[in-house]
Image 1 (cartoon, chains in turn blue, yellow):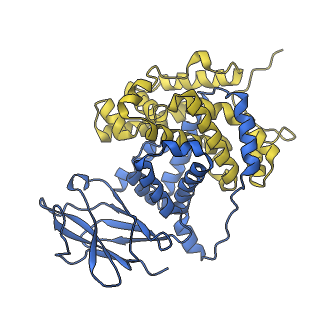
Image 2 (cartoon, chains in turn purple, brown):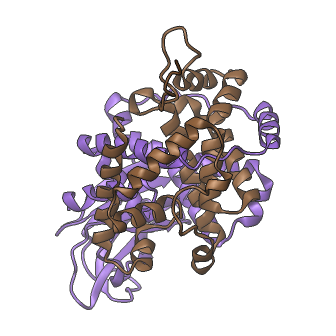
Image 3 (cartoon, one colour):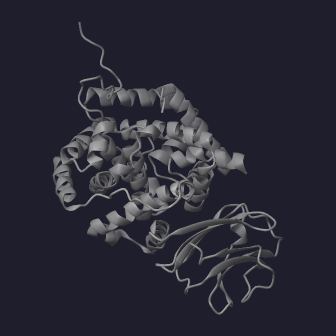
Length: 241
Length: 196
C-alpha cells in the first residue's frame, strides 16, 4: 500500500489526483520524508513547465490587483496554544485546510466567482470549510480487520469529513456503513460506501451531525441497513478535543 | 565581447536586486511595493499558465488576479526551505487554474479546449529572451520523454485533467498513467537540472 501511495507523487505534483486520494496521499506525506523530498523536486519541475508558457497579462490586471490588495487584509500567522507534537501532527492537514480556505476566501472576494459556483462546488467548499474550521478536530482510527478512518470534525459547523482508506473487501454482498450517534444513543445512518469504490479512498461529508457525539462504522448488506446489524469495527469520539 | 545570457533568472548575487524569496518575505510583512515587484517578476508565468489551462482569456486574467491576491494574503506561509518563491507561486497558480477548469467545463467541452499541440503557443509567447530560452529548454526536455510520459504530464499539467481522466483519454490503465506521470516528471527534472 505504501508503494502504491508513493507512486502517486507524480500525479499529486501535477494536481491530478481525485480529492479523496489527495487527502490520503497528504496523510502519507506526513510520515514519508523521502516522498516530501521527491515532491519538492517534482513541484519545482512542474513549475518550470508553467514558466515556459509565460504570457504577460494586460496592464489592467496589475491596476485592479493593486486596488484589491489595498482593501484586502493579510492573513496573520496564528499563535496556537497546542503542544509541539500535536502541532506537528496537524501540519499537513492545516496546510491542506489553508489551501482550501484561501480558495473559499477568494470566492467571497470575487462576486463574479459566485455565479460559476454549482452544487458540486458547494459540496466541495463545505468540505473545505470543515477542514479549515478553527475548531477542527482530527482523528484517525484503524478498523478491526484492516483499513483506516480519518475524521475531521467541527462542532461549530456541526459537520465532519470522513475519509476511509485501505478497506478490505467485506464479501460480495456486504459493504461498509457509517453511523452518527447522538445523545439518544441511537445510531443514524451517515452513508454507505459504494462497493465499486472499495479499492480507493472514500470521502464522505457529513453536513448535519445533529450534535452527534460519536461516529461508528459497521459491515452491512449492500444498500445499507436502517440500524446496525453487526458490531462496530471502529468508533470515533467527537466530543474529545 | 557579448556575455552569454544566463538561463536562470534569479541568481541573485550579493548587492544585486532582492531575490524573489526576499520579495515574498517582505510581502508577508505587508510591503506593497515588494508585492508589486513579485507580481512583475511572476505575472507572465502565472498568466501564461492560466491561459494554457483555462483557455478563456478573460477567465485566465481573473485566475491571475485571484492567484496574486492569494499570494498577498498568504505570503507568510511561504517557507524558503521547502522550495523557491517561483515554485510556490506557480504551485498555487496551477492549483487554482485547475480548479477553475474543473468546475467550469464538461469533459467534452474540455477536450475541444485542450491545446493538443503541446508546448506554449509560440505566437503569443513573450519575446523576452529568458522566456524564450526557458521555453526552448523545456520543449527540448519534453522531447526527451516517451510519448506516453509526455502526453500524461502535459495533459495533467496544461490540460488540468485528473489521472483517471488522462487514463481514459489515452486509453491506458490507471497504474500505467500514474507511473508515467511520476517517471516522466523525474526524467524532465533531470533533463532540466532542477535541484529543488
